[in-house]
Length: 220
Image 1 (cartoon, one colour):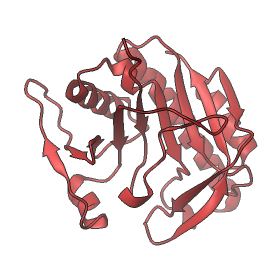
Image 2 (tube, helix red, strand yellow; image 1 turned 180 degrees about the vertical axis):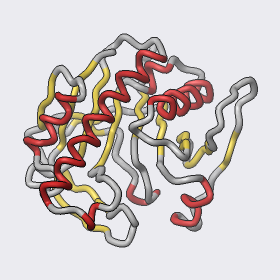
Image 3 (cartoon, rainbow, N blue to C red; image 1 turned 45 degrees about the vertical axis):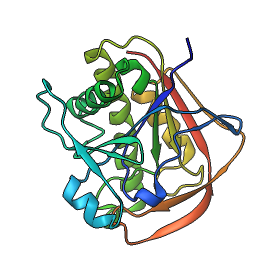
Image 4 (tube, rainbow, N blue to C red; image 1 turned 60 degrees about the vertical axis):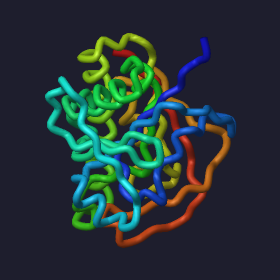
């Protein structure tokens, strides 16, 4: 039987700058047949921020999940998902796995995030922002592990993060410390850097930059 590769992303915003979930270490790629993308925004807000993007909302019978979901360019998007709330992760994975008719472990095997930052970042001092972002990444790891337990997933999960080592909002060393504090068994950084588009939390600014690529491995 052909291997079935899935992936999930956290904190999506602009469709045109969505996270590359096919990339793996060493400039290699995986063909992802089953992709789940999640965003903190509601469906209506997301559509306002992404005018002209065609969405196909759907609901699944016999699933009492109060989250909006849509198919966009053959991928499942689930809205109003907070990456630090295990119930949100569980709900989105259940929706995607039911839609694709695959095991939740296929979706939750590889998780991607790009330059996540806490809200109100402009109101914080540099050190306060670093501490807050460390807490954010640590809590995301804890949430992933909790969600995996609730879904009965015992296989290893990889959490990939696009973030520059010299990121003044969370330097590489602090990032790895946060991932480990959150329950990651191993963390490492790819030897290569990659070109990505990063945006501010309010979508007011976007820059293209070369960034480092990190991975944390964990199990429930």
